[in-house]
Amino acid sequence: MPNYKLISFPLCPYVQRALIVLAEKNVPFERVDIDLANKPDWFLKLSPLGKVPVLKADEEVLFESQVIAEYLDEVTAGSLHPTDLLQKARHRAWIGFASQTLSSILGLYTVKTAEEFEEKRLAVVEKFARVAEQVKGPFFAGDQFHLVDGVWGTVFRYIQTIETLGDFDFYQTSEKLRTWHNKVLARQSVVDAAPTDYSDQLLSFIKKKQGHLASFVNDQIAA
Image (cartoon, rainbow, N blue to C red; front, side):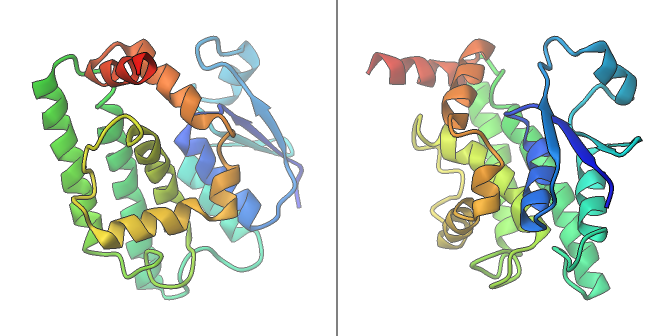
């Protein structure tokens, strides 16, 4: 097995995809965190997109989070995908949908007005309603944890923190979604993929964006 070095940023949900696979597969690796606001030159030479994660496998360089996660899954024993090829493709499709959901959640940070925020919130609600139709429970496909669960865990982690600011009803009281959320976020590989002060760091990040959601952070601090 090559020597692996993962170049990352603590809050990045896409980095967490690789970390979850590395943990599930017990793969040894070295981790190097960088400051995305001040990217070192050596990193920019490695990453064509200037984004994390980047995985060095000896001297070879991989970028794009899902490519890295899929590679790590394929080169280690067992698989975090279903064995049935159609179901494997289906899981990959819903992983892509998770990426779109992440983008919608990030859109909540910057809008300035309550009206804009509500529009963005409803877009997130709609995405969760769509994926809820696919969930068998307690994990996405039943009792077994798959890569798709880990990826959605990075989505749920955002929701978990944002929910500390108020009742935004992202899951529309769906018991199925809440069970999936809780089950995935209790998985040790998912827990360990984020720093212990993740919530505090994320709230600080939201506050700096000075959007409508930041007002909830300020209200929480004032309380």
